[in-house]
Image (cartoon, rainbow, N blue to C red; front, side, top):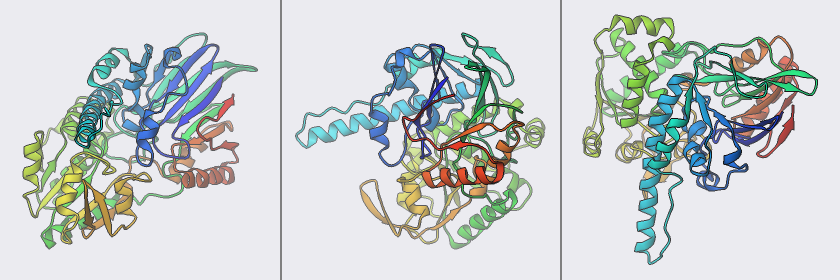
Length: 460
């Protein structure tokens, strides 16, 4: 087998791994790039011929893993997209949403060009029609089912515990000196995450491709993170402000709602008005509710109990409803995408609140290099977005314990459970994080490691 890395190499976004074995071409994920040079990377030609790819294994629905699938189809891919049922359902709504954004952005840029006297026409990365052509290609497979692909290749999904339906992929194939196995981690969930089960594991492999998003740091304990969330909400409301939480519509939003609901039920905070300003998040929450078998024991008990909601929860769809939220001066928790503040409705809520010292912004997920969220987290005094400069006077919290990714300790534990000593490829982490994680893997586990660059290929 030849493995070639075409994304998420010494960076977090754009996951894409190309496998070639016995004439079969396979992709594992086909994700969108975000942050610095994201648009350029998303628009450049695929470094392989899409028509020659037999199938894509999709580890989970997040855009940095799924976001270029419609473009792959647009350029000739006709194979299967193999994913868990929940991943397929979530990817469908996310990619329709992404296509709408691509079309609107292209339309706006074209109008802007024509107003300036130019005839340039901006083409979207892909359209709703491309997504419609992609949907029938999904082939849903459950966790734990070992299936045959072709020419002796077999595969199986195990639960990665990251978001609903997220999977680690196991692949068996014939190597030069007998049968071989490679495990591709996808994104590995943190233990004791809300709602979902902890990541599962397999006992043996020859090669591992592992993420390293938090490969150079440790998360705070969940209880400490919850205490910080309670403190942030209470002090913000006491100052007369609002709480803004930039959150991914799939995964993080559902986790935060679960935690807030539990806090109110336990009377650790008073009943809240929570505004989820994301039609996509509402659709994703409905999908979460339709897969209770994926929950951990605690979440399953609450689901079966069907207790009344403790939150005053408001989902908004129309733009006019979103604009009405900005008339609220205090006492609101506003959850909106995008999680890295790169687009979506969160930017409009920042516009009305980021300059107010009585307000707070709580970051509950990773902020990639070059994103607006990263600028705010790193302490920028002023930021530019929506065509204006804004002073950052709101209090900024970064609560890493709510991350859906395992930290360095958990990633090392995951790797250390393999009985033999596999060769390790480290991806999906900024360069500093990936290299520090590599050092830890060598020192603590004694494994052979590589941190590939984009385009690096290896025969395994």
